[in-house]
Length: 56
Image 1 (cartoon, helix red, strand yellow):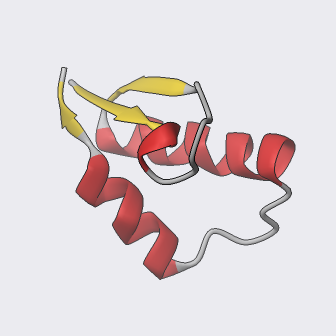
Image 2 (image 1 turned 180 degrees about the horizontal axis):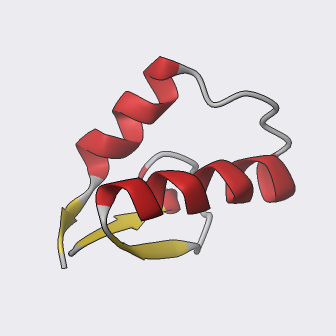
Image 3 (image 1 turned 135 degrees about the vertical axis):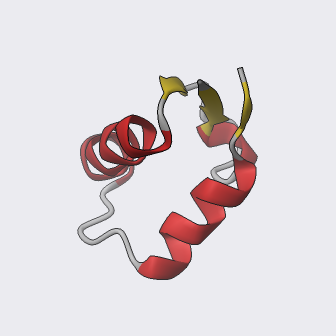
């Protein structure tokens, strides 16, 4: 189980996600599009998200 805080990448975003790495990446992709207007999750963004995940 891992945890990711969007605020670690997008300043002041309070969203947090917990689950497997795959679950978090899917949820973050939806969140990024719906709440931040990100159209495509690039490999670089996915790498940033992975790097910011911590054990829950």
